[in-house]
Amino acid sequence: NIFSFMSSRGFDYAYRNVAMERGGYDGDRNYGDKWWEWVNLYVNKMKLEPRWLFEANACHKQSFLHENCGKDFFGFYNNFFVANIERFLEPDIQNLLHDLDESGLMFTSRWNDLIIQSLAVQLFVPKSRVHRFTDFGYAHNSGHADTLHYGIVQLAAGLPNPERAMEKVLASVLHWPARLQNSSRFVDGMYTLSRPSSSLF
Image (tube, rainbow, N blue to C red; front, side, top):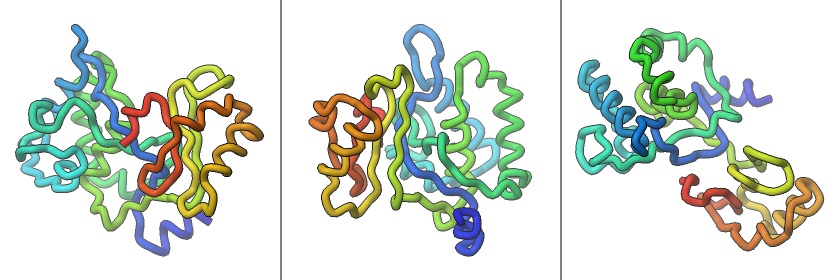
């Protein structure tokens, strides 16, 4: 029981996969500039010291600007996640969500649910209360079902023969071309196929 597992260990949030995503679209081929500017202003306004956010995004200085942190944002694939709703209803996260909504930039710059939810967790939930599941496989694909277009296939950690397991998944479960396996690699100890490969952390 996933919920009992979370509760008994005091976890407030759990995820399966991670991704590096641009923070929306600002026009004129600019991706993520306004996102980082907004994050920087909010952190300063609230006088926060989000160590996890700095580390996860490899920011070179204690300032959330794309010049320091790059364009991409470290986030949790939220096609699968488990969250303690009571924690997300507490004032710190609710204030963040309210300010994000009031900015209107979710609509004008296409800020998505992945970066917003990931920001809330990395700002306010201690790493000790966040869990990553690695003991089951995961797949996500955007586009037609004939092959992997934009997404990921990641096997569980610790499989004795992950290459053979991926071969079976591609052939028998997904019915995708066997040549896709040539692009597979290990990520965080899990045999992984992703497109585009650069989107995966």
